[in-house]
Image (cartoon, rainbow, N blue to C red; front, side, top):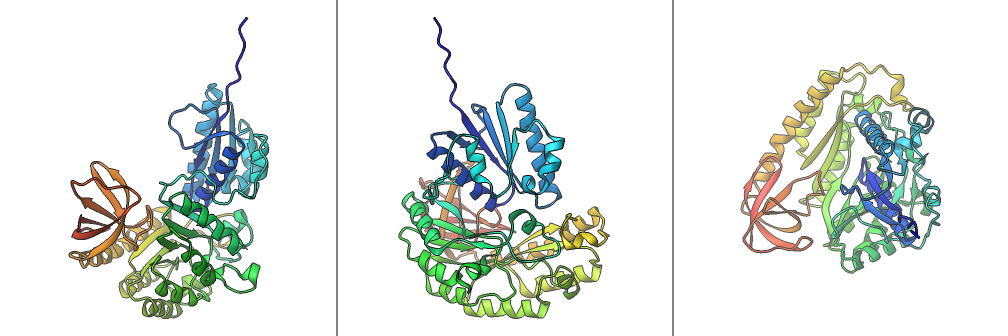
Length: 435
């Protein structure tokens, strides 16, 4: 007599969008693992029977990628290669009703704050004590740490508050405990993320507490680099710079999206700041932390943007000479206040303007990199690729910034730090040799 064996469920989590989504996926995976459910991140082996797609709904391209990914997984389910397809994340939060009607083959849709409901599908209870106990989707030596959820800002272009809700800070104790757990697992670099890092603590402690949090995190044994992402320029808390200057393991690095430089655009975008105020802030930051690496993000093609506005933005870049710049083309998003404006810059022109602006930054980046030739930097090796070791300095975050290509015959260990002397420099990357 043959006995039918039940195949054990295995879940594959596919993450789209930003690092905040990645953290959500890692937390989900940790909870599933604690519930004795097999789970993997973006597995190509196809040995799983359940998929969770964690979607992004930020801009048009991201939404399109999310929908296409859902459809790909549904097609696999229809071919009998998957048993279940679940969808979560920002797109699901924002367009759940539409998605349920247009893609009924999905077994269930969940919002951004419905982790316990996802776990119920697997008969797993949410365990709040699992701080830091997550299945990292990153290499084991670095991790993102989300210090807050949501955003209270009303930037005209941004749909994030519609998908993530109001700003909600985590307690300092919880964040420190998570960092301690990660450090014990071998994590050496933590990247602090939130929709607005510099608002941290106002809701919980009635004052900005990022500086206090940084001091506590800096004391965690094993954490060698702490990196700050997504600061908001209006009412910037200068005390975080004092901590950055005083503590060796807080990277001299700040990611502060400014979005534009023309006053007309800053006002239309509801950014609560003028170009002059931004220039004063940048100057004060550089005076407080000499040698700091400043990264910013810009938007081109916002409704009403003129060629003069673009030229002003280029002049701003040439004057301020940021170390790192990213750029988005404006996406006309339902529910935002800018959606009532006429999206009057054609897509091709938005892209042309973005490329024009990045050409200015490319030259700045090249000139700054050339000055690094002959200098020696502490470099964290991330990986070995095509026979070469690739790492980063404290001035470079993962994926978005420069990389250092290390030329050596020695065997290096990813996750370790090495002293590297720069021998060549390009627009966005460096080459060097071990010291």
